[in-house]
Length: 434
Image (tube, rainbow, N blue to C red; front, side, top):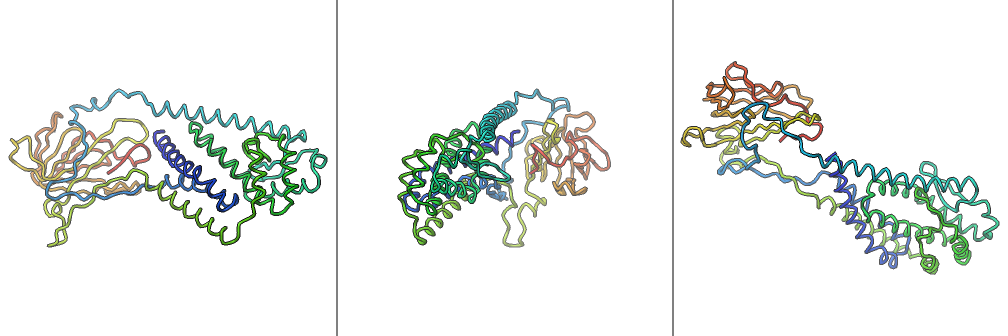
């Protein structure tokens, strides 16, 4: 649920930015390149929305061989008993927000379904249209009195307009916009953008249709059909009541642009769409991951590799999907032994829920690939010491300590001991491995 809400927030922010850009450019682009070209500006919105879903940039930060591994946020202290892992679950606000979003989405869908049902009821009685309706199989709907109300030239104008809708796939576009309005019912700019898109859509179809019929017939058809407007969320009703009639009639005077200006406008829209998508992707927060340490020029190996085979590793495990407690395990190199007066330096310190282990070196053979049955162990060797608060484990010494994530147990020179870590579970939801 948290992931769903996060994606919803990301896509809405991207769409808000794109809609604001389109709102500023739609009229200047229409005046410069005509309505048929400026309608393509709305490609900015899906481009920005889809780009925001792409993986963000990741910066690899190399560990500093002098100062040690990159600081990591660790649990405050090892727990003293397994029972202390269980904590009272706080109120899940993400669940509450998810429920509110679902309720709002359902209510919005019901309103649109009711409007669509009223249109189809009028269609069965012969009083709906002219319009284009249908998602899988778009079709033109005309009223029963179509021939009586419109002259032959006006009928041709209306049908040319609806044919332009069919050619542009506008009914399907409007159905997808309606679905987007349901998903983003809480975002007023999405609804306002849908209104502006419908206006530009109708003006673009006017520009396409008027090139095939007489302008006077087209203007008369607009005037006669102005009173027949009906809400149609999943189609293209003509004319829509939200379109100023004066604006549509005034645009009939504009001549179609020449080929050079048309190509310039299309190139400008393609460039704006590309820049909008790249901008939405680049606006995402940059992720950081710990990378290998700096290499020494002498032998091509890192300083950490020369000392102990690694610089540092941070593991996080959680039982996937059951909402259980999180368990942490870390590996660090060159840490001061606080349990020996701060004098002795241990090459490796491994923290786990029940305590810690100190050793000279470590070998990490841990892979998060769920298809690998092996490669789930971490081995410590050389002067291994366990420091825990669990009876029978504290202050044990040995030469080799192996943690096996498949069992969650420690093996100290053949003696099996608990670590407090859960068995390894492939990450599926709300869990991470670093």
